[in-house]
Length: 351
Image 1: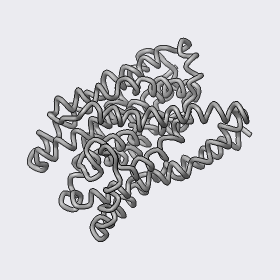
Image 2: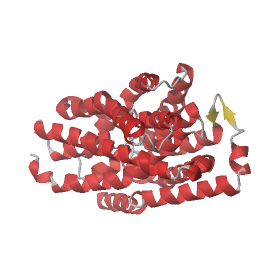
Image 3: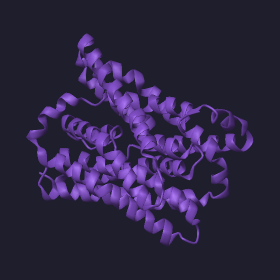
Image 4: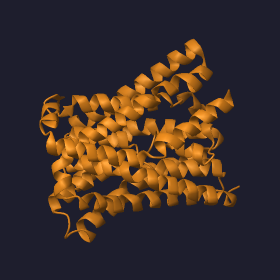
């Protein structure tokens, strides 16, 4: 049974995740074409909103996030004391380093290096989207990266579970602080509503579902059968979300297609930098590779589903900030696959 489960996992990884960037680019193209030739579609969808939150977008994002939250086993937090150093690295890099390096790197590129190519008004909103990415470390795709690097699955669960708990308290204040420095005004009520909608509700729902199914059918059934039912749901939600976002972004993209490449440059550098910091810290602390690799992956990758959701609720579906978070989806997968390869090749340097 374990072998069958591993085959299913590898198949899923080699399928959608392996070609995620291709699917993302196709969805971008479809969305832009809809926005260009069928403008009535995004116009009609924009009417369905509440408190600046797009209802269709919220539904699609719940489809993405809810299945991911079911994977988080908070019972595993009991084993934190066994290997605390790896968790300290994860927490420190994710919450004391990553948001601020993201802000600094993106600001330098958008306001200095690309000053002649991007107007200040657009640069401010692009920076806001990058801040949302930087304040949302990965909680879902990291299971894929951990598996590819032969990471310790139980420890990865602990890293992700504790990360999700920290997000509840730290995400909103960090975003508020960095956006305030950028002179972007964001009401606390809107920001906290986004946290409730896109973290608290799906996280609570995932916990309740996980507990109920395991209690009724057992952990083996939940891990090897129940979760796989939602694989296509997550994919469906992600791809439709991208189509919807880019249908609203069509005008901005067609007027400034080079901006996508310009946004991607600092995001890629940030990803590599954060991985290097976490990975090197684990090496210095002499942690095993099965802990070091996932620690680097969690910091380097982003919870882009959350970032997209909050960008849409704060700034609107057609905003440059939402576009910047979506560029994060496009750049993340190929870069992370390269980092996976690097981690595998440097395995011998770890105990």
